[in-house]
Image 1 (cartoon, protein in one colour):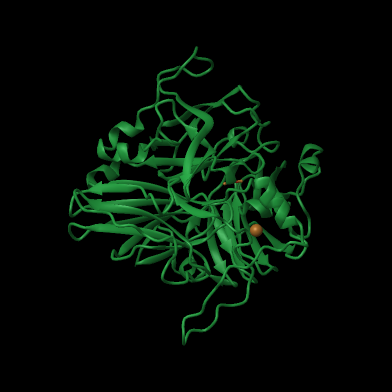
Image 2 (tube, rainbow, N blue to C red):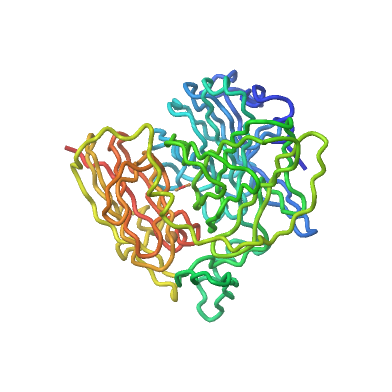
Length: 478
Ligand code: C2O
Ligand code: CU
């Protein structure tokens, strides 16, 4: 099994940015600075079983891409699978036809075929890539997409990139079929309540029974260990690539500083625990105070199952950890969100267009919709899919009201947005690409309509999306 991140870590950071060798004749792109991404398979070992999952690897085994701001995203994507696929560059703002969403931006990539991408990378940050085809994301078809700022090199930090994933031995198609079948409801996870504490608000969460939670595709029994000197500064780049799980990240003995969310900088927030929603990223700076072992856990919301990765000084022994947290993670809420302040916010401006949106659904029928309408491929192919019309140059605000009892991680493609109000209370919140809208909450986002095209806008819970919880943004002419 590859252990690419650890190797890259030990051998210094610079080499990671180098592109893999490009096989075959150069096509539209010159070979020199092209990164090849193979959409392929690799194995993971979970609970004593070795299973083949999907993966995105450079020819030298590097997962995903690490590159530098100011360079271009020159990528050759080759489909080595026997089925169509298509990678989406989550959080980037490419031209619309390079966004990697089947039907909306480009056709899915057939088996054996190649797509090429070439656009400028203007913002540093922690992003990620994942298949937007069918339910492939649940089969772990995702990877990091880290855009470094060379100015950060002077900080002398280790970069630790970690993808959090929810894992099931059951095929994603079967998981989805089980959710759609009301006759066989999945057992609810146990949510014990600590004595003297208020019981958590009654809500629906964690509707999939996962077999394990992984960090960099590794289970708790065999965690990835990042070896560091005894006093080290580390930038954790945490990516929640899970299909349907929100977490609390628990830094254990360390205190961290949250410096960016979804790749975009915020005024620093100190803490030991941070929520991370589906598809979101958190950049957390930590400093290890001395020699030792520092496990970092991610605990599923409202529950105790967890994943772990470890920072350890050279020579320190890493103990065994259990897959169960000693504390029940809270449900992810908007308390931290309301405290976040973008350090590079949108320019102050009145909205030219305000759109009200209801997040709607029916848990019993497992029907998830936006304004009561479900997205289907058929509607999209026939040009009849739902959309929100905007015009180039406008400042647009979208007021999302969650009418349901589940949290929806709402993601807009092709733009970054600012969280500008929660429950009608205005503030200059974080710049993001994905925001949690918790049960019955109202969250307002603002963005500048500066990237004309047709853009997907959807709930990032994979099964809600599969059920149709999506709409789109379309630029109107004139
Ligand atoms: Cu992370 Cu529509 O994507
Ligand atoms: Cu949802």
